[in-house]
Image: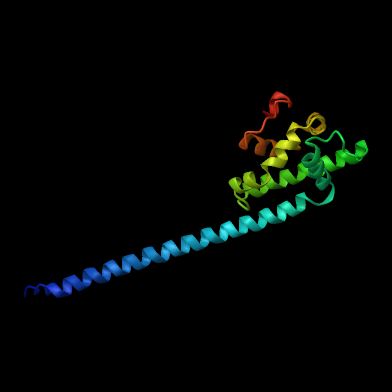
Length: 165
């Protein structure tokens, strides 16, 4: 016995129900994506604030304050050993920033917006350049993250040996 065709109203109802189901799934997916993205942005912002706080602590704070005030480290009131320690602290924090970017703890645009200024100032300073060159001579891999950030942010590292460019 042949099947009777469904009533037109039943077909329309099936189509409407299917359309509502698909729209609900799309809406749920969109909301979940936005919530996930918003959480990632909050996490990135939280990391940025913590990194900024760490950058302005310890001896790297002296480097930042001097670069902000004078534009260079010429008037830094520290002996050579303390200056080297402060530069190590400063550049190590940028190493950590590069690692955080690599592991998506902070997005690169946010890192650029928040910290490019400090790295650019340091890379233009003769004492900081001398420190980087000397460190490179001792161990060429020490500040790879710093140079990765500099490359990504289009900061000049012309003072460095060709290997790091």
